[in-house]
Length: 79
Image 1: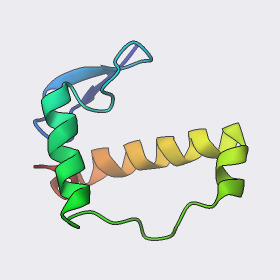
Image 2 (image 1 turned 90 degrees about the horizontal axis):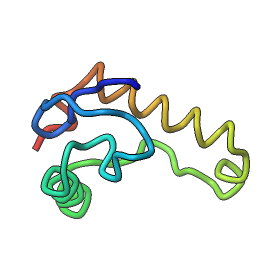
Image 3 (image 1 turned 60 degrees about the horizontal axis):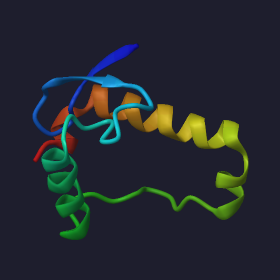
């Protein structure tokens, strides 16, 4: 299984289906991130269309791209 750092607290966590909070390590970190979205701290540069989500490959590519972006720029995803 792939190990990643939680984008909020940097604690090492597993990227797997069993981790219901992924990419976060806990419900707390997931909630902190949600607060960032709710307050407008985060934004999506271009909207995802329904057609994007119909194709499983595209959805996986989006998820992988977001994970890569989080690893490369953790300061943009910290609480």
